[in-house]
Each structure stands twice: as C-alpha cells, then as structure tokens.
Image (cartoon, rainbow, N blue to C red; front, side, top):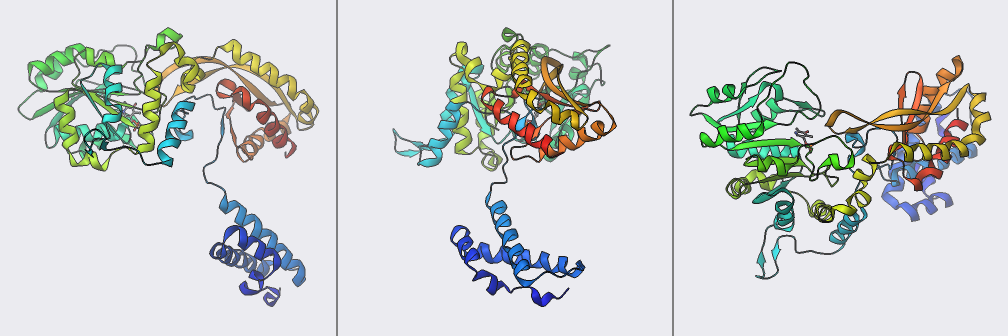
Length: 472
Ligand SMILES: *Cc1c(COP(=O)(O)O)cnc(C)c1O
C-alpha cells in the first residue's frame, strides 16, 4: 500500500473537522493525537493489501482522531456498580461516603479554610485539632492524630516507639494483608526489631513475660483481620497484655485494622473490636483505618495517651505521612454522624448496605427479574437463563473474614454448551460496559449480588444488562 496517500499532520490539522476538534480540546492535544493516529495508520497500511482512496483514508483518520480525543478527555476514574458481594472492596475503593462528607469535601476544596490556623490567636494551628475532640469523644482516648492510612499509622508508631529496639508480637499475629502489607516487613522498614513469641496457634502470657528485656520498647497486639485460627488455640487477652506492659513500664499498642466505633451486634452483625474497648482494656495506643467499617475516607487513625500521641506528632515522619484537608473534612463529617447513633444506619452508606435484610434484597431481585423478563427470549437465544439465588455477601477489607451475610444475587447460567461459553463473555462485556458492572463467576454461573445495588441504580443495571447481552 502506498504510504504517500497518507495526509500530513499539517494537512489534517487544517481540515474543518480538525479545527472543530481543536476548539474543543486545544491545539497541543490535537497535534499529539494526530501524530499518534498517523503512526498507527502507517503500521496498518504497511500490512494492508487492498488500497484505500485518499478521501476514504482521511475520513477514517478523522473518525479515529475524534474517538481518541474523546477517550483521552474522559476521566480514568470509572464509576462501577459493585455486585461482587464484597461490601468493603479494597480494589473498588472501600467505603462510599455519606452526603454530609461529600458536601464537606466540596466546601474545603472550593475555598480556603482554617486548616492549620488558630482563628482566635491569628497564628499557626494544628490540623489534627479539627477532629481530635470527636475522636477522643468516640473512643474514650486522651488524644488522637491522623496519617494517610492505617499502614502508615502502624509504620509511624513503630518508628516512633521502637526504633532500634524490640517490639514483642505473638507469632499468631504476624499478618499479611493484601497489597504487600506484612507486619515483619513494615517493622523492619520502621527500624523496629521484631521479637516473635509463642506459636502460630497458641501464645501465653508467660511467653511475653519471658521475652521482655532491656531491649524491649513495645508490646503489640495485631488484629488478625483476614484469617481465623481455629481449634487448639490460645491468645493473651488485651487486658492481660496491658497489665504485663504496665508492670514493665512499656507501652501497649493495638493495631485494630478495621475497628468500628459502635457495637456491630446491635444490628445483628458479627462482633468487631472497637478502639473504645481497647482503650478501656488498657491500651496506650490504638491504630485503625478510616475507610473500613468506620465508613469514612482513607485515613489512618491513632488514638491513645497524650504522652505517646505527642511523641508521634514530633516525629518528622508524621509530616511525611500527613492527611490532606479533603480527607480531614470527610472524616470530620462522618465522625459527626456517630453522635446520633439512631440515625447512623440510614445515613452511613456502609452500614446501610451491611444491614440490608435478605427480604429487602429479595424484593429488589423480584423487581429486577420482573423487568428483565423482556430479555428472556434474547437470553435463551444465547443458551442462557436468568434466575435469582441465595448467596453470602462478605464484609470485606479484612473485616470479619469468616462471617458472611445472607443475600440474594441475580444468577445468569448456561443451559447448553454455547451458553456456558457465553457466561465468561458476558462477565467481560459487563466489565467493559459504559458503567462497568462487576459481578463474580461461580461454577459456570455469573452471580450479581444485589446487596450493594441502590434502588436508584435499578433501571441503569437493567439497561446495562440488556445492552451487554445484546452484544453477545
Ligand atoms: C487493613 C489493615 C491494615 C492496613 O490498613 P490500611 O488502612 O489499609 O492502610 C493494617 N493492619 C490491619 C490489622 C488491618 O486489618
């Protein structure tokens, strides 16, 4: 194929359609994308046998140019519909925020705010002060500070309290959390020396007592968020560890992982440890995440004694790991909701989703199945059938790993060989759709767990499903 048919960058940029695109996207972007499209075109032409007329070629280039420019101008952030059945899905951004938090974020983004400014004194203030009182109120701690996430909180506390010294941890708690957060690695990077005690399944008080020496700086308990050791097990309760630490004049620190500020059992959910309890049992410092069960933005929260929090705040690494104002604004708004527990379930999206009853989800499934009847013929044409099925949702994010919540999913399964093949194809099409729908494949079926589907998204889901099935 003759490459001389190819228009030049300048020729293309002068065409009326290109001038229109330039107005919308700007000259540098237009030229950059013209170059990219021409480059691809050259490669394709080199392989092509049948020649295209110059007009036809230019027309195709312009079409490609426009579609590239549009793709590049849309955000890489894609809203998705989470039908995975995992409520706090780390890969899908964990907790979604309440309206109050969203409004607060917009406000601090729009105008300057007194972030680190003492309005009374007219001088520099401390950004942690904005939420410290709320955190103390909700956890019973004396003081609080914040960093980027809980991994950073654990790192910072170890670096502050145990640099070049030993931290004693039970062998049953040397956890790895997805995304390469491993306690032994974090300890090493923080400069702390890990002193493991006990065994994988059993650790006793005497293991800790015997391990204490002049090199010890810290006794630490780590919440085993994402697994459970069952059977012949023993661990030392926090209250005992706190007493051992106190007797030896050592701080006792608890990494709670998720942590929740309320008693989850009041909603029929499994019990999860709270910072308040840890403090009451005698912990000097507790760390937990903002975007797990708490239902707020990504942030690492440290609460504990004034003395220790002060020490942590003086560590220069605190500045390295500090939280942004948008996060702080969202966190403050979420924490405020906890002051009115009676309305929390309605206001906090994560709690609303976790506490949805199976009946409520079943009603939603019925509504959807009813409306989706119109695509039954299309489905059977592809060897597929749509039903509903009882499933188990997970809380996710390493919170309460073995506890599952009864839920209902739409189930699409194959009725013949070609149907079976279409299932994986459909899963892919849904992921690639305008608003990606993320379900899960299970035993040759596609399950769309409805726990996290808002009522306002039902029509959208119906359309996306019909559209994707139409593309099979
Ligand atoms: C989740 C978790 C972390 C890490 O928290 P991030 O907020 O994800 O950084 C640390 N420790 C435990 C026990 C956890 O469950």
